[in-house]
Image (cartoon, rainbow, N blue to C red):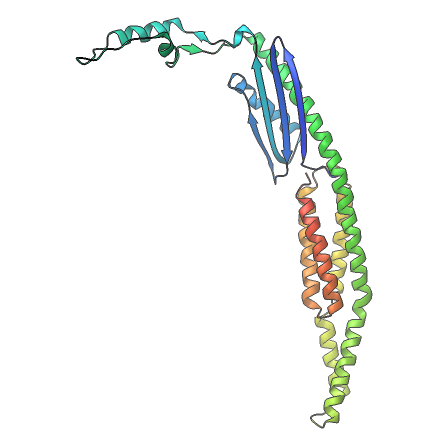
Amino acid sequence: MIVSMTGYGEVHRSDGGVEYALEIRSVNNRYLKSVIKLPESVQWAESAIEKLLRGRLTRGSVTVTLRRRNATATAAYEVNQAALSRYAAALATVELPDGVQATLDLATLTALPGVCQSHELTDTERESQIALITEMVETCLEQVVQMREREGKALHDDLVHHCAGLRETLDGVVEHAPTVVTEYRERLASRVESLMAAGRFELTVDSLAREVALYADRCDISEEISRLRAHLEHFVEICDAPTGVGRKLDFLAQEMLREANTIGSKSSDSQIARAVVEMKTGIDRIKEQVQNAE
């Protein structure tokens, strides 16, 4: 069954006074492209999240956003006393130009690089956080996958509906195609008869037959009709395949458009030309819809 690339999931968790909010958005893309936005304190979890994404998704542009709010004492940065003392000692030895006075304040010193540092996680804390983040990503991904499957069901039904419409239009072309040569022969014979009656030239029956035969060969669209019909049948079969059908469907849609264009270029009949326009419109809709199939 077709799976859409459009999906959304959201999960919230609380752990020891720390609030987590995870959001995953998925839209269509030719390949799997992930953008992972994490707080600085959990940047180390990016590779684990990337692995989880690739384990469940094969195509799509996926954005993962994790927000973290720490209401505990561990949210405070730790002051590196050694670095602070080193800065203070170094600044105290600076010789200022005559007339220049300077004062040191704690706020300025703590803003210097390396003075204030975030809390270093212990191995136990890191394991606890990665377990929580993994659980959140898996839960959120399940929501995304379920939404993609629902969207895929609607996409499947829409594509099958468009294929049915194309088959109906193609059946009309098949029914009308044999009359094209007959009508051409009648028009040509009538024109020749008028010219011959006016005494302008003479044309043998064999010459007329050859001209009709050449026209019939030029406008023969039976092969294109057969290929287009086969593409439509194959397209519907692929729609019911398990997963990963998007690229195949996209290729088949291009091939269907190629056959429709050839039918239009080989036939000069106005009724067939209108049918070709209708088929190309339907194929364009299919091509647009297929872009969202995984």
